[in-house]
Image (cartoon, rainbow, N blue to C red; front, side, top):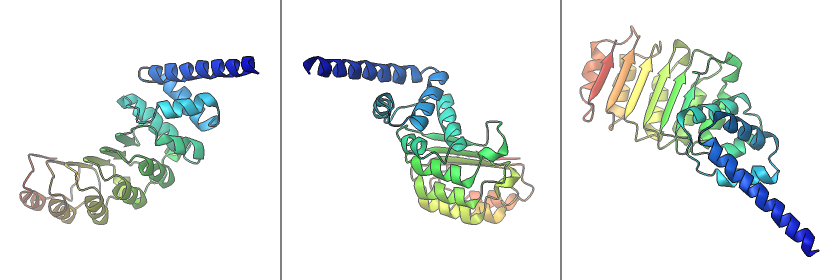
Length: 232
């Protein structure tokens, strides 16, 4: 009996060390991150998975590692195990649409699932050339990411609206930087709303939108903290 207990403890120690080794490797090797994503998503009940999950709580990832984890969650957002464990990572930056993948990977369901899990998110970037993502994703950003400081929206398919601007302002009061590029639905009226709704705004970039005129510049002149304005 004693021997079997000792053997079990020995195996547990070995698995614990393995989990910690994997965790440390994950800080520097993308292949290991992919392995861990697969482990958490496909074998959630294993001891190694559970120990890795606990060891990776609040794990700070590099930019490339964050993108890898986010991409995996987008592609497999219906996997309850993967999403449940996704929150153990301390994801601060989410880029949507910049991976060169097929459009099917980007849906409201996937984006909303990720944003709901990223309570410490400070930066969001959406390259919405795809049409599977709608206002519902912006609503999730406003609802779930109160620590957000910067957001960027690219592409005519985004349909970023006045209502989206107001919702994000209400849910994310710390936003300091906004980048809007080729968003056909953005007008001078949208910029006027932004100027009023974001009191901490320091930087704003409005690129590739013929709907923006000098009226937007006049609106932004009322922003007390604004230090950088880019128009083209």
